[in-house]
Image (cartoon, rainbow, N blue to C red):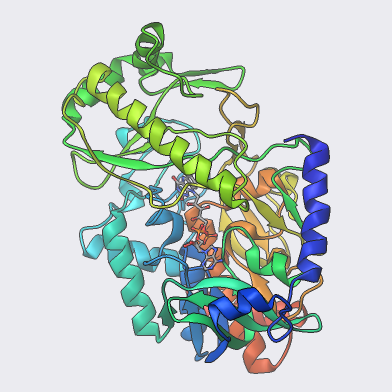
Length: 490
Ligand SMILES: Cc1cc2nc3c(=O)[nH]c(=O)nc-3n(C[C@H](O)[C@H](O)[C@H](O)COP(=O)(O)OP(=O)(O)OC[C@H]3O[C@@H](n4cnc5c(N)ncnc54)[C@H](O)[C@@H]3O)c2cc1C
């Protein structure tokens, strides 16, 4: 997609957002007739759209402050990319020196609960350059391997205990607007069209769909480069002879390198063999394969599909089919070329395509990547993180990421990133926050996404209790409330 197409998409986004019908004003009688009338079904203080890591944390944090919360997701479980997408492990929650755990709060509580159920290994025990990080030795210290099925249960329970009402199979269709103020949403559920009215809304859809349809300006991917990060369909395998696989990799560790943006890392020697035999056509030269919680289970992050527009149904459908084709090719590769994987079994592929990037909602403040590189801790800081800036497929083809190390031990994320332009009563959480494309590439991973969600939920609760709009919230009120919920701010 070229720069002009990208900019055209941005313009179209703003126009379409402004023109979308609101409840009661739908002029398409045929569609309305086919779906039935909109039922007045739900009334809450806070509606959270999207049950991924950021949405769950937003909902729980707000509910723990006494707010009546409705959390809706279009799938059948909570966790978003981490469960439906099979993505993992949790990226680092430590500082750049690898000394202190700096993402705490709900993230830490969820990790502890996972460990108590045998569903994770504590990040203090996981070092980079090992089989738990696909032997990657930069920016991957102290990841947290976890089991996605156990994570689903942990999320179910933590929401139920906090009193969050959860709806699955509930698709956000359009916002209910009064002028610029959002007052809920129309959902498409198995019961038909249903209105979920709320005094405040959090957009945790990843794609920024709520903000976009409410009229907030958005950009798609990186308007500067005209690129969007490639999509990847994750999958998990078991029946792996872990000791033989490790024995094949370890002697090659000194050869791991990056040449003109192309990574030659895990199993690059086996990929070369398959390539020479004409049995490899993926846009990668090595295989990211991470050991998971159980000894013989591995997570594979290796499919790569360039130019996917997750906001376009046909485009996304084609990507899902291509993702599964690539998984088949990879399974053949494992069986034929990789010691220890001769009889490996495909446990499953993600039930949603792994989308790294789509819309970035624009706020008055857009977090620039330079602030992360320089380790800026803003005055309205809501979390600390040291996750590296990793823009996958930045150069297209088999080229890997544009990897930018940070210069300080950590950076902060300002509350201002959660505030979309032109819409009142709405907060952003997770991947869609107001950040430029490379900055979003760093803070989109699950630990910071959870911390952003927790901050959004706390901010929403404070605003609801004070009767203020999120844009008027005083940071001197927000900071103690974050600390009260064990958020680490240094
Ligand atoms: C290929 C890939 C690899 C990654 N690797 C890692 C990794 O190793 N470690 C790590 O920590 N992070 C990783 N990430 C990043 C991380 O998984 C996501 O960025 C993170 O999950 C974002 O959280 P979120 O809550 O913003 O969105 P999501 O996890 O995307 O959750 C959004 C939820 O909203 C739902 N939703 C969307 N639209 C609607 C709608 N209209 N109505 C109702 N519900 C809706 C979605 O179905 C989903 O459940 C990876 C991401 C990808 C794509």
